[in-house]
Image: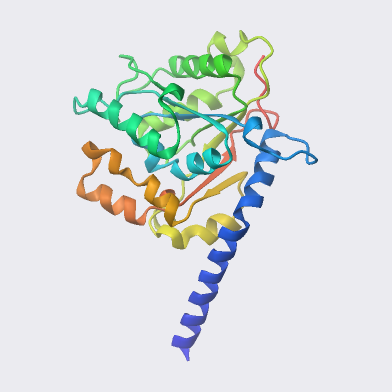
Length: 275
């Protein structure tokens, strides 16, 4: 009898997963309206979304943010990538730069929308303490240049706990009064919503697509989901230098290959207004 119960629960779980995939398109558009503060009477299309993804290293875009990139690109959003290092920890910076360009081409971000920073104060090093003022200044310049209304990056735990990931979160979540003067020098830009990728526990992180119903049911401001076709695009095959044995395990079992959930970074009001 218990076996029948297990099979029944599993089939219900699969049915719920299928239902989530079916409903996700409409729910994603509704969530985008809320985070961008778009009138409910208007359709949210790509013309409304100007998104900046801020990462620390080449391969972050597909290891952690691929579902979001793919879904936004499918909506014809203007998606830009700001990568704050070349990934030169093993002196492979030039090769990893090209791998990033190749990866983004697969994900749907053209090279003209990719900026890779090479600065001595922002090394690819988990032991390095990045300059928060430099990171915030770099991000602000991109917001100012392209009038982004959405910025996506890591949360305070950085998914993997990498110090470079958490430094980006610190740079965008510090109170405005403590940040570099660039934050207050902007002239009348549009509202910019800051979103952080939710870090989940180890068990949820590595149960692959089985984690999907949990991400769907638990509260979040934005949830981006892809299926098997999107997964094949998201896989890290473009990052050949990073394909060690444990990365193959990550590609197979990580929920971040299928689903991203975001929370708004607290900054006073719901949407950050930069003056």
